[in-house]
Image (cartoon, rainbow, N blue to C red; front, side):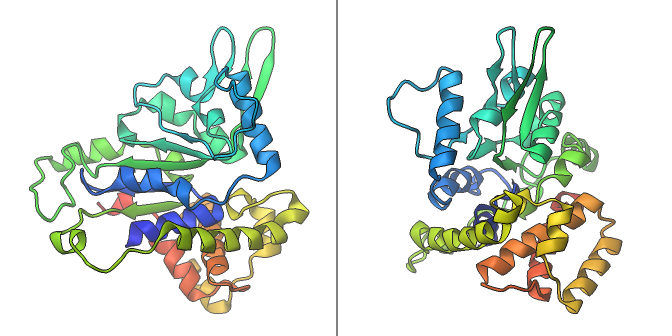
Length: 307
């Protein structure tokens, strides 16, 4: 299943994901299961999360928080609720998701102003709040998992139900998500509605523990490679880190060059494809990034533009 593969890659490299599919296709269920395949927090991460929840008044236990946060705010959340602030500044959802997952269901239903404030923390891993008497910074290194329908009625890509939306309605719906925000989401994946045979299949599905083991191994590889830069996963790499750690074969470079021209990619998209390809290579225990790794990374880009 393509969506499960995308979430495995996301968990392995700390990447952001956008799932697109009709109602009932399992997007929310998949998002809520991602914490079961993420590697456990190390002590420093647990301390950071515990401090954040203590400052926010959401933690009273004498023990540390050891489970990765999973936050799922409603689409009526305010800008201050998402990013933090208020008359008495408090951490927002992006900070409460630090070292964990921020899940935004029905992404286009969130106010445009709320979505746009995500751009800075997605890029920098922290938020800055300025007030008359003080300037505050909160950590915000999180995985963004977003889900949306392909159109207002939800059925433009459904093989069973007829879409009732006009092309203009679909276009306006998709345009609610800005290009710069979409550019910061590494993996775009279609989630089709499961058919009857898939729901009743007798073959056992792969267990979360098996996927989690592959994810943990890939993360360990990344920690060893990136510890010299004081970062821990591929999603946190900047352009200079890519040059130092990501070796592409000639064939991989050629297909990436073709995609860059054909898909009119931005420099940010170019870097993010390489980051995802690096994670796919890590899952394959490959030091080099070859054409199969780059091809799969490219397949997860710009799906909204082809609806």
